[in-house]
Length: 393
Image 1 (cartoon, one colour):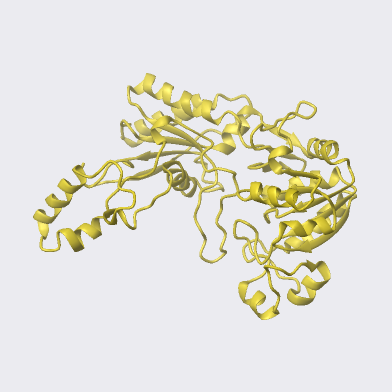
Image 2: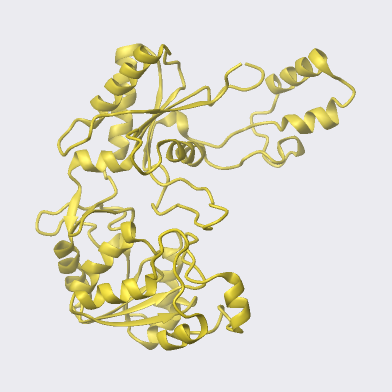
């Protein structure tokens, strides 16, 4: 009767230079022996990007960030636009950016950041009479309209927090609010686009409007600085705070790790288990409104069997329409037969309406992120079983 099972698996505390693939495989096999389950073909073994990067030693310091920013922007004034509101994700990056600049013009989107962290509520915005599509607010106008609101979960006033952080690093801070990327050019022509999933559009618009030096976070620490860690593809995107002065970068060896995990499991069990490295999943919190999604992609590395989208029939559609006259075992058998006969591509067909047309890596990665959590569960490894089985199997 059991269908999809997502099982968090404990691991040792991962340190730099550990063989992460060996640790993952050993932990999964120990869990299987202890809990009495067996691996099967097309099971999925996933490991969080955080421990992959930690094992690889992919770290950098705020001084490294500062030097790269100074080299690329000249150490003068830089516009920092559309960052997410996060002590863990962006604050330490901002500290390094400010250290490498004389002035930072921080332009925040409102009422929320890109991933759903709200500076202010929609109701407060409605009551203010301010038009978020056109109005550019100074810090003074923002305070007059909205006061000093705090994030409902963290209790932080991110406006004050980010401003103070910039000034602590010896840079002048000016905070403005706008949802139009081009508005930053009224303050400076040197712009660092700090949004994650919309970064290319933001960069394009700022350049088209006359920006001179316009970079994204992908272009900061996309190469080593003084022997630091780096990520050639994503730079600072996907980084996390490690200490007060260091960050852990997004792993650049995720594909290699996923493939090694699969190869080791085939060698040790004879089963072709899929493997992936996962980051932030995609799911919206109904209270805080945050979408997660603070990494540039959900799955930076995965084996070939995880390519593609689900191709599923909607069972309740079949039960309510095609087989409305059936019940009991006759209904179940009719549905099983229809599943066995389904087309290889159901895209656009009514019988698949309401299924989830997202990439398998995004779906499974989100499941893994929810399973492992981000706190003290101690389960950076997740085993997903029966995901590819259906009602007819």
